[in-house]
Image (cartoon, rainbow, N blue to C red):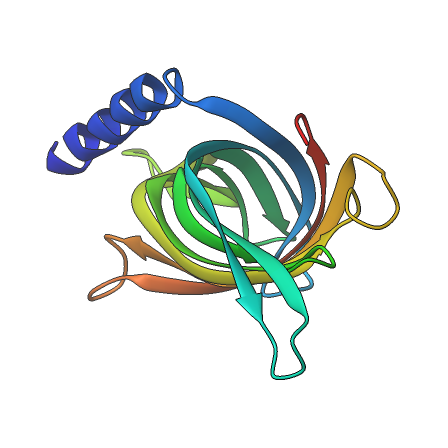
Length: 194
């Protein structure tokens, strides 16, 4: 019951906070649990705060670096054949730094809900008969990530970008203390503002 309360709090606070911020972009990505187990993730980025800083090199040239904090609600799934299918809602908060050429780096964390469905599960009833049944588990999930990519609005004047985002997802309760999943996410981002 405590996990359900935490999940509901996260969902409500993410939705309410996102309504007051400007929608920056949305993305679609390959979400590979243990890299090779395919999945799909969709998320949106809301800007919390953005700022810029102009730096000067030793040769006197100047360049502008932009930075910011974003909140990113996301939904998705992954499929591990003969083992599990996972569905998740995972809001993230992240820090982003982008250079004048459009290359960016992100660092962040998330917390949300993961539901696993387990195929080919059977149970023995009171008459010693074996029957197929549906099995699965609910988890509180967190993720820790960094990402790097490029914003193509800068040089190519296209409203898209791409990114690679390795991450660690930790789900509880499971086994003695929890289960960790390595995820490789590769995606395309569509920007809604310049």
